[in-house]
Length: 482
Image (tube, rainbow, N blue to C red; front, side, top):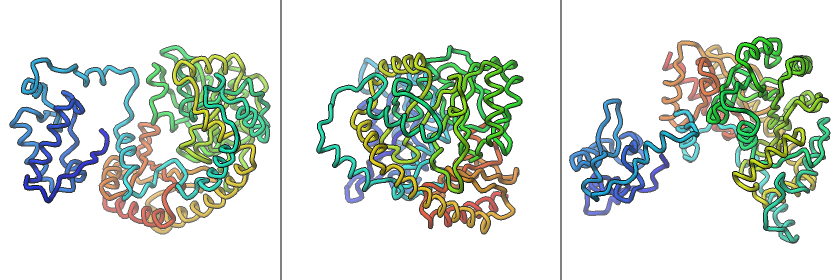
């Protein structure tokens, strides 16, 4: 449920609990909260309305007495089915049953809580997988937009595969990493998530099994699951996904495709070694197993450039390559790409035309100008310097405050530190405690159910002061829970 952008009027002659009751009643009467809608918890309502919890309790008791809400045995309060008998003889559709019956799976509860909390200005975001606003190229992007304003830009739809100039620039950009791709084998998408969605519904049938690393970012977003696919995780070691296990897992689970994030892996930060990359391609070629290479963090190296992409090492066209500007430049630009064999790209382009017709034309023109102007490389150098500084602050804070309570390795790039905690620490309690105390964490269980002793710590978003302060407070919470 979205945040409540309303507060009771403390100068009103009506008592606070009466105003709150009326606000909720209006939500119900106007159909914004239909029958079965779960009302936010008393604590959340009290925080949102800036009142004591007892005031919320009085409001809910009045609404219950009037038949508008009811308590559930499993806890919580929902809009009562008989509330509409007081308003009309023709009850509305049971939207709750429609919502539950939707094909697309809901986000995990913890992910929903994180998504809501990230828009609160009083939170320290220790898990957020994006660059801080002061690391985004605001001034440079203004220059790009000013430059575009002097040109005649078509405002109609672009080609099904995306703006041709942008595809040319992407082809030139990935050539630096050894990838040979013509514009006809490139599809522009609205970020890497859309790329994965198109791949899930465009290439696989329901019931297919996708092999991937465990843990993996894909477990935290139900893209393949909502399309009726199953995810089967393969273990990792310090060199990345254990490629030698692929034949066994492919046979046992009838794997149809392998997804991998080999460079600055989300959430562990691991970089797959060159030797392991060779082995992975060799095994997948022998098994006839196509790959999706998610390479959105490649440019964010701090110490040394990472090994070549799998796509650059592959000569059979069995690797589908996903890239994006969201992690390096602007998540709001919503520009990414898929590179692959033309029949695959044609298929994905056709499906994309059925869903959103085309990514924003203005964003595509801006991205093309961004890549062609040389400003992108200038920006990336700045980001690497800042990530080096932020990583240093995070490493020092972990050593100072967490110490022997946890273990971690220093990432060589990307955003993430994979922090192992004592098994005695219950992650869900730590997550909820931190949320109450103004810190957003990403528990490892989001990335694999059995990763109950890990946190994904990001040093890319929180300010330098918040990184130090947040990790200090995190360490204090861990000690309290122990």
